[in-house]
Length: 169
Image (cartoon, rainbow, N blue to C red):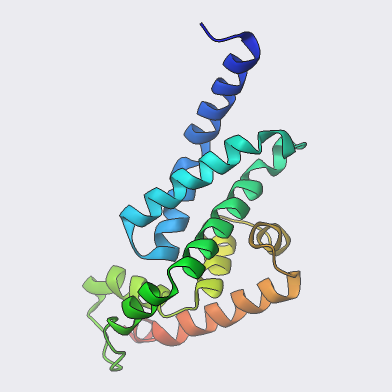
């Protein structure tokens, strides 16, 4: 049987995973464009979070703290595997200006999101998909507020341009 302190820590860790695992995994899936890799990075996120649990002083900031860890792990992965990322980007289908029918909208949205830089994709997802304020996203991404606002604005413009075919439909 675990001593009381370790038992409480284990319960806290389990609750943290249960509450935030889905959003962290989805966030990383969109950044990496690879479900298996995203799951590995999410696991690393929670392992790093468990090791640093004492750093969280305010429970209301736990969500942005976890997203900050996830984003840092993603950036670490990119730095370590830059060549593999370049090969993956080189194998992306070229943008030939054609769009699918409305039934292919989900694929078009995914392709539009993939056309954003990783920084824009992260900022857009946090602010538009997860409801983060610009300041919360800036903290999670460890970027200045103005930079995050710029990434969101530019990302929205690119998405709007990419998906403009649906405005006419």
